[in-house]
Length: 136
Ligand SMILES: [Zn+2]
Image 1 (cartoon, rainbow, N blue to C red):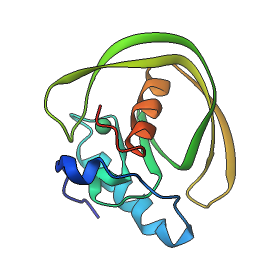
Image 2 (cartoon, rainbow, N blue to C red):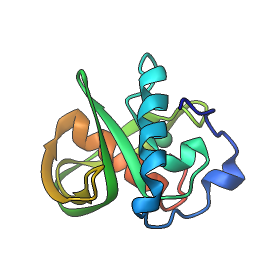
Image 3 (cartoon, rainbow, N blue to C red):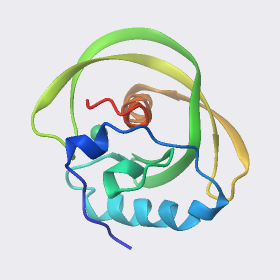
């Protein structure tokens, strides 16, 4: 189900908890909501639809994939850039890495490990940062 985008900074500044198999519906809602906003958004964290759980969805070209409880395990190629967010106005400076490795679970809660570079890596880093309550 497509959800409304949360723009309340007091809510978005709260930390997100680990997701469990009871959160399967949140994964589906998050994918539906990203699909509905693909013209202006390339990734989304669950707190952007009002759920403080560690779930993100990422658009990589025509594909949308969810990552549950993702953790960055390696990073290299630090750079500074500017980013915007559907939950915020304007652009903000941030530090990113060109290559990252991530441990996560897929939507069936199978453990996965992936290596990402470039724009996809940047999206993943932005969305994971939402878990800490930082506003980018
Ligand atoms: Zn964001």
